[in-house]
Image (cartoon, rainbow, N blue to C red; front, side):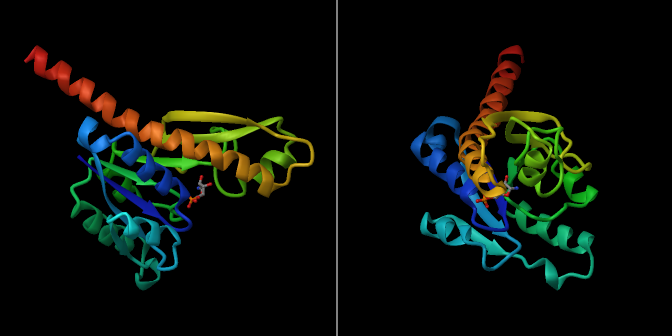
Length: 203
Ligand code: GRF
């Protein structure tokens, strides 16, 4: 089974998933591998990490397209070339059109650095601090065509500390992102395996 990961930047969540897949031997235990990492930015730091691990990488710059739909159609064409069972958005900073989201319905995950449904959108840490939150966190959710709203898969909570800035809070949240995103991806395939076993025994 194939995972395709989409990134735009440092790719630390992507790296956490790749490391978990190696450490826990997903290939042998679950028959799952990270087949490719695609970025909409050529300068995404995560590309070098993926290449060094022997993972296929591609860059598709959205600036070369007239419309979001055109970009998304080409992106889907390239993603589909890897026959993905799961597409993972890991710091992919593009809003995806409904056509793209529908195409991957039920096999598209995103990570959002807040405790959804609080603080969808950008600047989540700054907004959590401004609201006086005592706790912040991160959510892995299924992607639907409404931004940051799909069914919640995993969450982790961190305390807000006195003197926190958006940066210190973001760093604390990020350590938990690296824990729950690999867990969510592994859980996706474990659930799929259980469903398959039930179908096989009841057939
Ligand atoms: C993460 O905080 C993610 O939740 C947010 O963008 C950041 C990406 O970090 N949407 P990285 O590229 O995975 O290091």
